[in-house]
Amino acid sequence: MDNLVTFVGNGNMALSIAQGLKNNYKIEVVGRSFEKLDQFEKALGVSIEKHLMDGFDTTGKTIIFCVKPYNVESVAEKLSGNAKVVLSVLAGTPVKKLRDNLKPDGVVRCMPNLAASVGESMTTMTGDEEYKETAIEIISAIGPTRWLSSEKELDIATGLAGSGPAYLALIAEALADGAVKQGLKRDDAMAIMRGLFGGFGKLIQDVHPALLKDGVMSPGGTTAAGYCALEDGNVRNSCINAIEKAYKKAVELS
Image 1 (tube, one colour):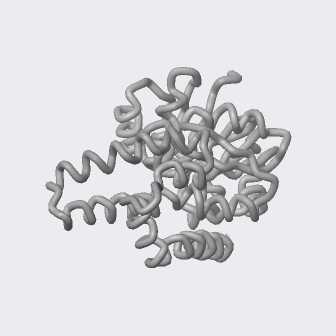
Image 2 (tube, one colour):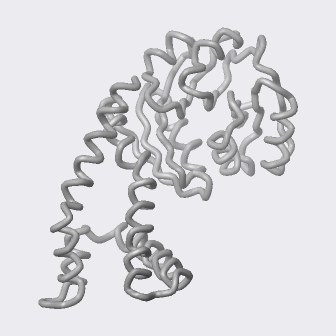
C-alpha cells in the first residue's frame, strides 16, 4: 500500500520518526529479534507489522534505514530485493555506499537531530531528486526539513544542525552555572534558562541574530558587559571552529 513505511532498525531514532508517522502511515519494522520488536511496538503505542531481517524482501518498499553505520554491509547481506527508495539517517555514510550495498531505485540521506524525539528536529537531506518530495513528506513528521544540493553540504550541515544540540546544551549549562555562581538557586537558574531558550527559539525564526543582539544591548548596560565577556572568551571563534571540526570529522567518517 502507498502509505506503508518500512523501518530497518529499531533504535531510538527509528522510534522517534515512527512516533511522527504512526497516525498517517502503516508501519512495519525489521529487526534482529522479536523481543526488541515487541518492545518497539509497546513504546510506539500502535500495532505494527514485525519482521526479522534474515531474508526480508525489500522490493518496492519505502525504507527508513536506521541501523549503525558500521553495520551497513552485514544488514544488507541479510536483506533481499530492491527497495523503491532508502531514506538513510546514518551519519557519515555516503549515498554511493548505501546504493552499492542495498541496491534500491533511489537513496536519500537524512540527518535528523536529537529534537526528533519531540517532533522538532531540523533535518537536512540530499540524494536522488526524484525522491525529494517523498523524503520531505515523510521526514517532516519529526520537524522542519531542508533539502541540500550535495553531500558536502550535508556534511557541513551535520556540524550545525546534527551536532548543534550538544553545543547549545553546553551554553545552556554554562549560563545556568554562571547564575548559580552569582547566588541564584539552581532550580531557579534552570527554570529561567529553559524559558530563555524557549522564547529565543521563536524569536530567531524571524529576526537576524545580529538584530536580536542589538535590540537587547543598551549602551553601557548589563548585556553589553556580559557580551564583551563572551567576546573576550573567544566564544564566537570557538563556535566557528566547532563547525569546521565537526565537518572534517563527518568527511573522515564517510
